[in-house]
Image (cartoon, rainbow, N blue to C red; front, top):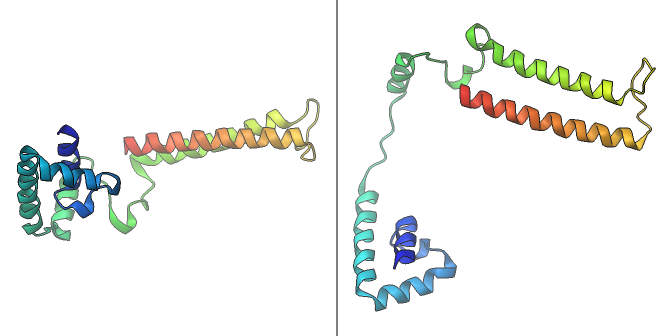
Length: 152
């Protein structure tokens, strides 16, 4: 019964929305079990009430007022990222610095000792190392971006 309730709660009372793999079993169970049939009737009533509710979206003016009154209000909409100055500019600086340091570190690691120029890119081991370094940089950037998103 708990599996029946779980699926009915998750997908509603309409059998066409149930996973195809369990639909037949669900219908058979509802037809042979009075408690399941009663539960399905309750879910149908809830579905009916929810479908009668109109979708009400807040107006743009209300959204603007709420955003303007929020502590530490930030711009939103088309120009949300346009203002890089101010107290949040350190975030962009941190990301840029991380990228620069990662590239410089990769270059220093790949450069053979005693040479001044760029690494020898004809060496397949160098390409493998570059690939590993780029993957590490990509992981770092994703991590930093996720952390910045959580902070913002």
